[in-house]
Amino acid sequence: MTWFAATDSEVARWVLQRGVAALFFVAFLSSLNQFPALVGEHGLLPSADYLAGFHRFRRPTLFRYGYSDRLFRWFCAIGLVVSALLVLGVPQMGPWWVPLVAFLALWGLYMSIVNVGQTFYGFGWEMLLLEAGFTVAFLGSDQVPPPRPILILLVWLVFRLEFGAGMIKIRGGAEWRDLTALYYHHETQPMPGPLSRQFHLLPKWMHRAEVVGNHVAQLVVPFFLFFPQPVGTIAAAVVVVTQLWLVLSGNFAWLNWSAIVLAFAAVGDSAVHWLLPVIPADLSSASWNIRTTAWPAAGDPVTWAWVIVVMAASVLLVVLSWQPARNLLSSHQLMNAAFNRWQLVNAYGAFGSVTKNRVEIIVEGTMDAVPASDADWREYRFRGKPGEPTRIPRQWAPYHLRLDWLMWFLPLRTVHEDWFYTFLMKLLRADPATLKLLREDPFHGERPQWVRVRNALYEFSTHAEFRETGNRWVVTPLRLLISPITLRDGD
Image 1 (tube, helix red, strand yellow):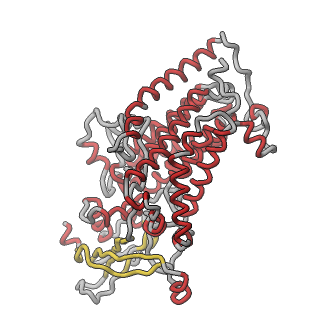
Image 2 (image 1 turned 30 degrees about the vertical axis):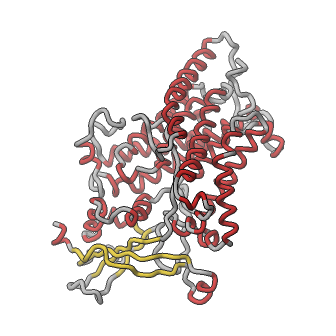
Image 3 (image 1 turned 45 degrees about the vertical axis):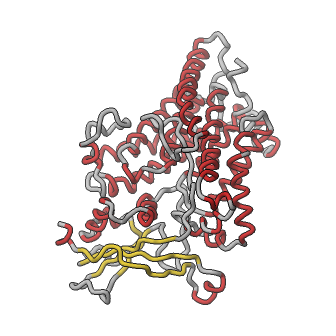
């Protein structure tokens, strides 16, 4: 069984199981706080309406036979409890099938949410978390050694995530090939963080170096993840460092944290123990990770039951890898695409082209009876998207602000989307659930008479501009996108 047991990967399993469980906890918490207002019974895109036209052969969901906000909250509560127990390592102390069942429960519950979440759940990190949760489920408990086939498949997942993103960039906008992409990205990314302005103001030669480093990290380093130790650990360390750079420079929900956690699939215990001697060389002897029984002998039926389950899952994932592998080599490479209804072995990638200008959607309301241009228009403030010129962007990742992310996409597509008009109507009604998604309601729960939508160009201020004005953003109003509307217009 030496081919099966990865005895040098106890640290990897410890981090993978607890890290992925922690990300599930964040995902369920994010959903619990936002899903009902976005796609709940009375949301912007009600799930019941979506399910009414839901074909039974579409992606699976436990809500297929009926949705209610109460049932959804029960799903989230179960997900939070199970993921918390996995973070604490409780299921891992039992037989091999206990963490398997726990992770598959998280996968099934969260997939049920994602598959009715519509546009608010149309992000690549949703399918990444689902694939990671399903694969990590087969790492077993502390009573069995980490299975090598699953660790290799997790490295394959990191490879697709990193190499896929690198190829999307090379095949995408010219700014990635001429090394100018980072002249714009820190300023125009969907949700800047507290340090994004400082990154944007770095010298241009450093921006070019960032792009070169990105290409090396995504197009070269992933191949070394498959190499024997210590090369695999060194490659994983490069992935972790580059992902931490992205964590510092922006807010991308749990995308970067997922890559960091999954990179540990290539990490060997010996390398970790050499770097951090305080960590026990054999985690199975540590007080917080005790195997209650020894690994059974090769002829033990428990051994073969475990091996058969792991190998069956491995064969399934290998078979499903054919289309994603072809996609990586295709000149028409798909980005963030699922090839099966279970969202397993997907295609990943992001920012094939970089937006050159940051245009923000601004939503305003007024209590005035006549919505003239000189009326008292007050702006609704969002939690994550830029607003006041003086405000420092906040750090939200790995938490995901779904409404704010969709607001970033509107200028790139159109403001005339159904969910956005419903959002405006709910502002006119001062809907409490909708207002809780915002940072500031300028009318403090009162109904405005009118709302309107305009846009503005947002640019990071230079050091000189900041010293003069105290503003972190230079805001240039552009035009009115949606003329003032009132409930009489919407009803």
